[in-house]
Image (tube, one colour):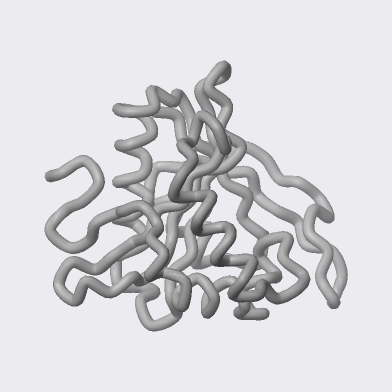
Length: 174
């Protein structure tokens, strides 16, 4: 198995050609409740992000976004991220986004496992962590299947139109 790929998917750097995919995913209000986005992104803003992301490495930006690409179709099916990269303490946060047409088909689990392998073997990280809203059971189960364990519950962590959500802190130790 290749480090950033297997027989089904490959994780690759974002490219300028990914603009339409990112525009679609970043501007989906259904996904905003799981993060901190409150407003749409313009194509201009995303184009600027892409030009910066392509030219900077994780040690400069402290983050890394990789596209999850289905090998058979060569179609991007989502993204997997490292953020708050901390090379001194050997840890980073991680997150994943899958296109709604590609959920529950194994792509998320494979992407998280490939990211874990990359993080531990190449970046030499000791741990990854993720914040999962308590109501997002599919994401919770995905991270559990990938070897993450519940490390804590943050009370009233994410504000929504319906009130505050508790959020699980999930942790993977490499």
